[in-house]
Image 1 (cartoon, rainbow, N blue to C red):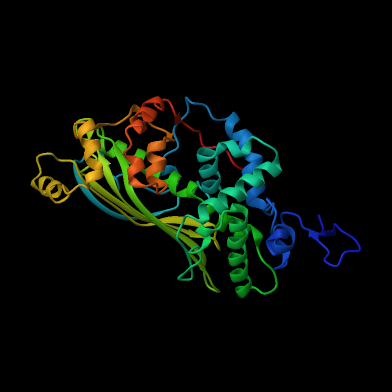
Image 2 (tube, rainbow, N blue to C red; image 1 turned 135 degrees about the vertical axis):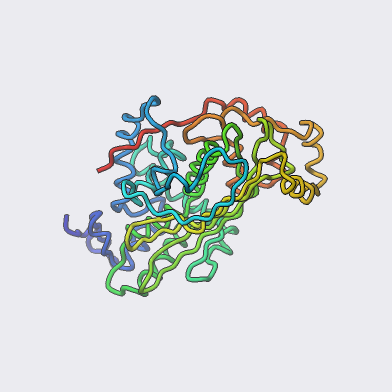
Length: 373
């Protein structure tokens, strides 16, 4: 469909472009049509997300196989071995050729925020833009080495924050192509900056680690994260940088005072080639209770702030991991999302949180890979 004039006899004529035409839109197109609204451009990735949801739900049979980390990355048999009490792993994992960047984006929203797909298309766009603004302003995001979200936290209007983020991305894309802007790329930058992606990837990892450490289970704890964007003539990319400790059970119990592992990775996304890979994936853990190294590590980590002492007394220094972490599938619990979402530690250790966890034992999503076109 060719671009057409929506308004006549106006000083600024608004042009409505099709999804394909939005790949080569005028630099002012976003500001003229979406700034100050609750909408974002209906590019290919947006249409792809919304149109595929019903089929995804229709084909989601709980008896089918579970979506796992191996579906997204090439993992050899010896890369992440099962059954070891301790290990130190340092890998770079390539994208699984059966997966695509668009699928990765779609899954992160289908499985972490499915409610936004159950309304009209405009309501869906509204929810997406609101979420972008909400997540961008609480994430440290750097563009070409400079932090761009430092002052976003002071702005209450999430739609305004989203507009500001889009404009920064668009302005930098314009510097490398002064003829037009690919708004589908701008949309991908924004969607991937939502916390859905951090949450989705780390939950896949948690499930993978559960298999490796079986029968013990693990929980991501004290996560630090930020996002690096690069937009220049040779590279259009982003990198989700993550670092955390791991709480790991011993004989089914977990001691929150003594993390027994560390996890860090960089999820690198090449937006020029629509590809992704896991760089500097590091996993170190030791759950060997007979190990001198573990005992030494426990001693050095034993200095616990006073505010954790009540938790220790109430639970006899041991926390029983809820059953939701035992089973396979993508999990959605306040416990893990709280840890990943950067909530204050004092909220993480509230006594009433354990009651909520036990009620969420059945909140497990087993999913079949949707046959995307």
